[in-house]
Length: 509
Image (cartoon, rainbow, N blue to C red; front, side, top):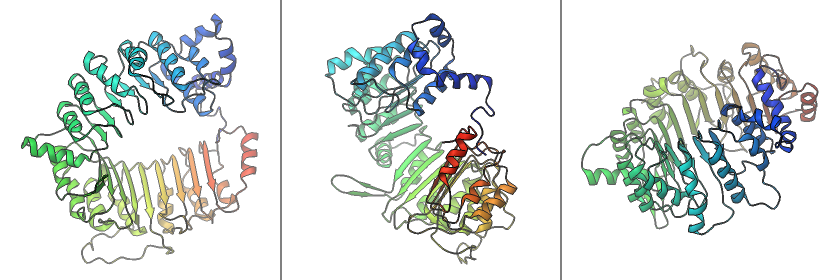
């Protein structure tokens, strides 16, 4: 059952909730010493919690920062839609005032996220406004300037002064960020771990320079094809140098303004050889015949994979049985996240469960079929791929997302398999879309076996066989549900649930 707002909360959390509820009153009296002094004593954790709650409620405004910015604050998020601007004010000017205030009060700030897309001042104004403020944040490690005009000037400043030493820089969609800017920045920021330059003027040359001059770089996000970048590095250096990247995103076919660049055979082997520390893989199989099961299996040579996301087009060049399952047989035991946007059958889901006993986040596109049980699938090549009847629930599974590729075509899944997934004791999120198998009886059996003591979010969409009776089984005292989303399900009385939530003071959205 959704818990009361105060259930299982510490005294500290209850106090912070009280501050949030009365923030407008405290802000109006912020000039009084007995009001402002307690705020100056709050830790960064408390301040971040209060700011986040005010954001979610759409109540955060500039005046509140007078109280919420103190010497303990370590994270300042002024990204898009972060707060409510005052009437007839300009977001950029408002943000600048808040950053100036933070530069005076927050000497321990480690994270700054900024947004100022409203207008474009001259380069001189940029240099005179935001850029010089950076030197006052001596401990700054994470800087996000996405969609702002400050990206290039700040990179030049950080490259020329060497202070502060940034660990993460995000300058997506920032005008003026070029290869030259990248070079100046990299020469003095060699300890950078994460860099994102999407939709900037940085070319292959700039990305190559970054890879070569940032020895601790683990995550790199850019518009240029990263595979082509490593091919050029290999061709230019002609030496087997290893790089520290841990996160890799690839598309099997790149469409440029001039032509379509297909996947080049051997690219995976090259990446694995040059970046043996990869743990997070995102693969967009968007056409082309070059990326085959054999190429996908090149990732088996990696030491450790924790996250695997595969997105496919209408006619994928890889298969579940020929590519994905063999890869999971090698890396499944260490895998924590698996997301497959390619249709899988019930039997193949069993195989995935067997391969990935420690999975935490599982997102699967189930084959559009009306079979109630998985049929035996004979495969002369992969005849060993048969699921065991001894499959046990995934004890580490926290998030399960099941969906159909087409909203007009629901999916059916083995009832035993669906129950097996719902029996997972650590679930925090259940999201099922367009499933005709899920019904009140399955929910009743799942709730009888599983207390769902960690479940906070339940999302059911287009599940026509689920009624109010099924939803009521989740309304028990053992689960801490904080969010229920029901769209186009069976006979579910949403107004009744809203009224019940208000009467019982549930912390329900």
